[in-house]
Amino acid sequence: METHTFAIVTGAASGMGRCYAIQLAEKGYAVLLVDIKEEALQELSCTISRDFDVPAPTLCADLSEPSSARRIVDLCKEKGWKVEILVNNAGMLITIPIAETEAERLQRIIALHCTTPLLLCRGLIPLMEKRGAGYILNVSSISAWMDWPVIGIYGCTKRFVKGYSRALRIECADKSVSVTTAIFGAVDTPLLRGLPFMRMRKLLLLSGFLISPEKATRLALRTMFRRKATVIPGLSNRLVVALCPLMPDFLLRFLFRRIKIQ
Picture 1 (spheres, rainbow, N blue to C red):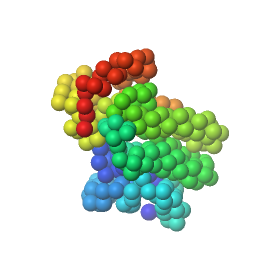
Picture 2: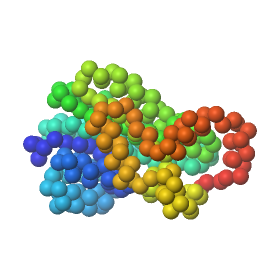
Picture 3: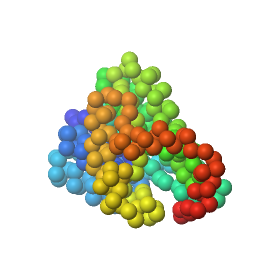
Picture 4: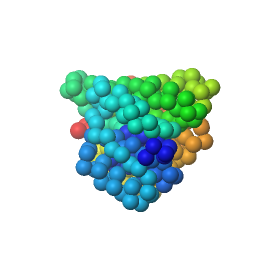
């Protein structure tokens, strides 16, 4: 296992994380699969090992826990793995007004989207720099431009990802480590299942507003390997990024009163 070059994928058990892991294994990378869903992790590990003949060790961890980033970094050091890629993909979605959200859930999303990914970058960049090569893919969202009710805390955490990723990219420019930010809109994953607009799933997929996780991850990895700063798949998403900040408060209040997402 020590002879392989490693990629680390968080939130690997399902959705886009699973796609990242499989696509990286296809390229010959050993993949450390990190997620809270142990059974799904083991199934994916067996699939990757069988289909691509590369190691796919697993680490079952709650990435909202303060010690989780250190566990991952320490494991890589202990095993002597040659880590070249970090995909900070793990996430959660809260669609409840901030004042109605349990404090524990607010703390979890901040830790999951902000604290742990930042500490993983902090812990793994020196290892990548020592090897002379590295790629980091941080997953943000078009919601980083949306100070919108109901998804407000989600958008704010994704804005943090966008901001520190840009700073980190500049800081790492002379270290042979590239930092790329994937800015996604609606991706057809379990994270969005149950939201009202997903009733039009087939139409949204045809229009390009909703994209498949396979396509989203393929574009993100291609951008990462090209050492580009950002990827925003889809014309509609680029329009959202341009237009959303212009929406006035009275229009958002109007929408908030009429659209309830649970």
